[in-house]
Image (tube, rainbow, N blue to C red):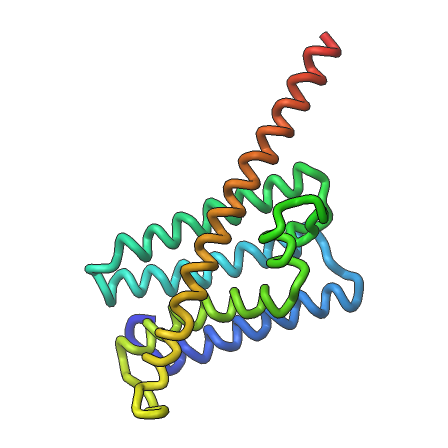
Length: 188
């Protein structure tokens, strides 16, 4: 990633496209599994973390913000997925309609989910590409810079949604803990 932006970009794009295809294929063929859901989350996080670590090298004055983004992304997604499994959900994307309205829209509207994920990736990818080149010009502006400006608000909202993942998960996990303690007290 630090030396060959063309190969790295193509690998990243292909990885993102395959990530989108594998989820649809698993659902279409009714082959979704908990292992697949966990592997999907893990590979998503690893790919993004590698990109963010590279951005820390390229833009050292912004390292804190990239590291904060990494911490939010990893911790909030991990606790959300883990809590979903403890609740007995078949997928972290299964939302009870009585749950948080933002999460309901995020996970039930495929267009919203796609725009949020693609916009987040586009923001970091544009920052990455801008380190090497401005790219083609579009309406008098570098295409990569235009993508960065347009996708920045989406990346910030996606981080806020990740924080919401973490918040909801902490509440749900505490409910699980309380129920388990009550059950323990009743049996003793």
